Image 1 (cartoon, one colour):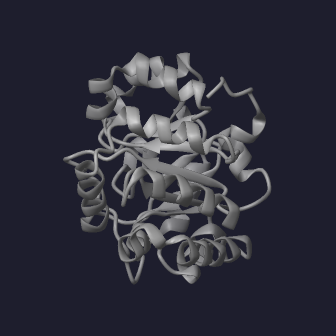
Image 2 (cartoon, one colour):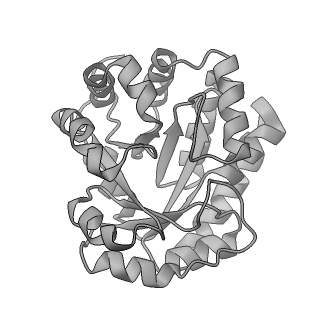
Image 3 (cartoon, rainbow, N blue to C red):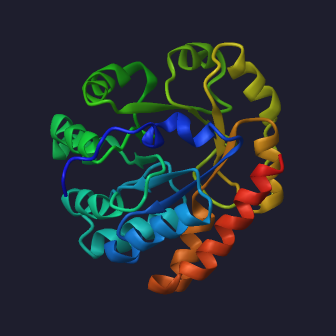
Length: 266
């Protein structure tokens, strides 16, 4: 694939330019990379404003059982980093919404950080989320990523407390606001005082805040988007893919449309 021309459509900010954003996550290689390429296109066409592509890792410490199983299935099918980059190259022939990677430090450093972000730049991957990257140690990775125009997305959780201001002031792209304690996964109720948490974040920055962890139903997405700039859904999408395998296009499209509609009403 030839080098992609630079376009503002790929910028993270484009996801929030037209109102509240719906951000979807899926695990690359689950059930296989060919299906992942189709599902990214399906999600984009159904209204996703930004898609997080999970690079599977054998020890995904922030993930619940649903995404852990997806990572295991993907790795068993050979979803290695080079193959995932090749899949994204195919996707980029038709998908022009912002895409970011979500993975752990190990896959990036094993691949080689400079090499990793150089390939991100070529494919217009403008962001990366690394749940096991401590705020205090982010500079080394952030410096390499910035060289290639890739933003390291900051996470803020209810437990961040006195660190919220420091994290928010330095954040770029958007802030991933973690709605619940624990790992990823569908939750019937989100009991954290998210409105207060977002209000605290907004004292220090004006970049978009999107809320994730536990969101599965349209009502939840609408409620979260009402107090922020968007909602992030991962496990619920991965569960659809787990249930339907390589024939998930229709239920996936219906789900994304319903969630985007809910977010838009916030």
